Length: 349
Ligand SMILES: [Zn+2]
Image 1 (cartoon, rainbow, N blue to C red):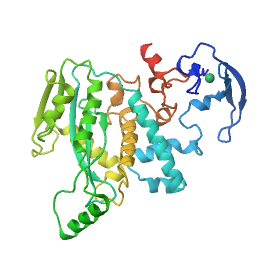
Image 2: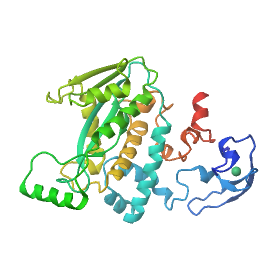
Image 3: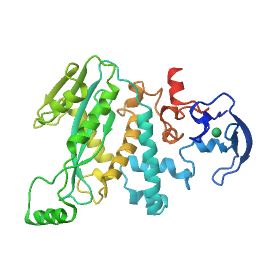
Image 4: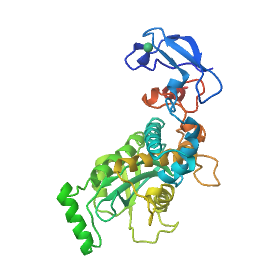
């Protein structure tokens, strides 16, 4: 049933332009974690061997049997340490699994995007959190969504300077940190720009870009620079008005509330925190994959956000988002293909 879509070795001619029948069957092996044998193949060009397993996202995992439970646990509000305890993994193994899985899901999020159809509305906001120390290392976290489907286009954290109420102790802590690391940089404009640029990639075919945000003074210029002044319709809403469902920004506020609920490290009054910003970004991709591909938009819906935008044919199971490795761009195998058809070919079919 499965047909290797390419030679998995990047330096082989059959990796980039696989010819039909570039491989031959080459025996099989019995993995420890499964009762059935796995087919091996040999590339006729470079003569190296590989198997169906070489194309799987759980290739070389020690406990692939735990991956689905692991993903659901981390994407729905349980922290790393509690996940480790629940599944009987060591903390080191949990961290390694988290990083590998989240990097895979980041690629999946990027590979399975398409173009937005007219009528799409982009909504944007930033929420505030921190890395390691609440009083000295705040982060800003821009989030961009498509309003109707609640599809999360992008989110990534950036350091900002400490602000707000300054107690004596807090000032002392900030001075201490600045002595050690220098003044904390403010990179929020950069991450806002990058987040909006991810939206612009999806909006290339739209005659107009409908963009909604609050009234932060830096947004109009950043939006104009990203989407182009001639196409942009920027609607701004005062962030002081009540955050009820009639508030035009309710969808993004609601998404932010869900982010705080679904990622243990973003919860307020929590014991947990991200130690490093880059791990927060990885956790975001895990949550985005769950939210965009696995979860229904609302509980009464059948479809996922990505499905509503036409990026996928149907809602995916956790097993499907974790299925094929995604490190070859749209040449990676489509997560819904059993035979090994690449994303690029399945789309055009
Ligand atoms: Zn080869």
